[in-house]
Length: 437
Ligand code: B12
Image 1 (cartoon, protein in one colour):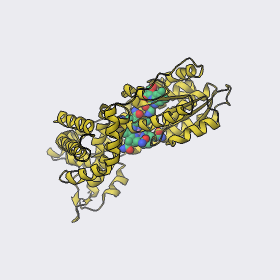
Image 2 (tube, helix red, strand yellow):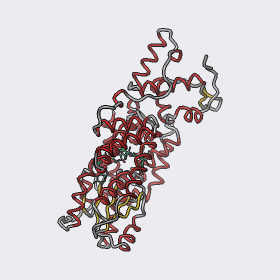
Image 3 (cartoon, protein in one colour):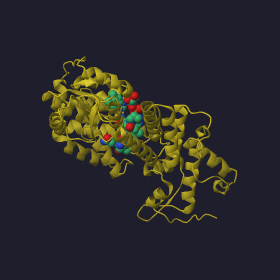
Image 4 (tube, rainbow, N blue to C red):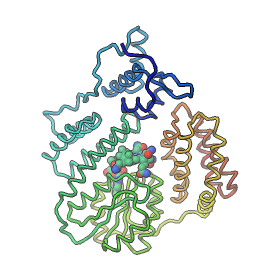
């Protein structure tokens, strides 16, 4: 019989179940499962039964049920007087049926197998899947079809709360390790050109720049890979030192795209041949016009051909678009008064059901992104970031009213501190807030 007396704090439960704190709180709030007791100080205290409840829900998800279906199943059992935990069920996560491919070796199936193995933290099986893929297909195809698409699919599961941050970290760790090994095993350069690849400040998504480096290295280029978060003014220093024929900058998010713009401006000012790409530019293509250098397009695979053309001098760059005067004024005023604006919002937002920690993260995130959107010429770029803002504030669909309240508070604080000059920010936030309700 599992104990129902409260004994474990949140940290212990997260360690035991591998669930993210945000997900656990979301399950409690949305579905009432589990239902921990509270200490006098308001901290959650879980029983052994609560922990097994969470594991039961995770196991149902791994079998393919959505969380709401898993909760329905739990409630059905409880209402028929059956203790769900008395049912026999496997406590460990099992591979989906379609992950068994003894007879079918296509890369699509191998990708499913790799993803399932990663979600199960099964390193041996993940490595075996990759080895099988490498035995039937060229390195380039395996890296794109299994690793890149696999990471993209795991990213979608993570985003939908169907994979934990630990599962995503485990998978990207394995993927990165394999790319690293392939890169160090690739033959010495056979072509004279040097290409420098790296990420601008605040960009930590290194999977695609590493993959790009591998693909270019296998084409014979001398590739120098600089990795994540390189200070804007340092790229030019290295590019000049190694006599790079091309520098490729990669960004996936709005705020790092703004840093990428700074970096590209610094490079082109020194006449360094510059190119760039990443997920955010596929989503918001208009921002490309504000960045100097060659845009490499929406597909990483196809960008290799673009790089060839750029290096052959077959591509010219066009004049970059400048940001409107109204936006420039708003950006300067916002940067100067940002800390005042943020303090005002914190005071006003008190009655909301958002923890101070989440509120701080959310405010910081929105501030960075407002500045980035202004810098890149369109506040509408912000719309891509709103889902993440909700996640950071720990809000869900049912809490549209709270997001509305938050956006209005932000907009009013902007108006109060940078009245007039902050008008574009205020208008966008107001319009967005009104759209939600
Ligand atoms: C792994 C991962 C991480 C890892 C990165 C580990 C590593 N060393 O790379 C870690 C945990 C560090 C991380 C952190 C964060 N992440 Co993250 N991450 C991912 C994930 C799952 C995969 C990233 C990746 O490798 N993508 C590469 C491939 C797999 O992506 P793809 O989009 O299919 O690529 C296609 C195109 O975009 C394009 N492309 C991509 N790169 C390039 C480059 C060039 C040159 C070209 C031409 C084309 C190109 O080509 C591909 C098609 O051919 C993505 C999900 C996703 N779909 O990307 C989220 C994702 C990028 N992350 C996201 C977020 C929000 C974050 C965090 C803010 C989370 C947080 N709260 O802290 C931080 C930000 C960190 C930072 N400041 O950089 C969001 C970004 C959303 C947005 N609106 O900006 C994503 C999209 C998840 C999501 N669905 O919301 N992340």
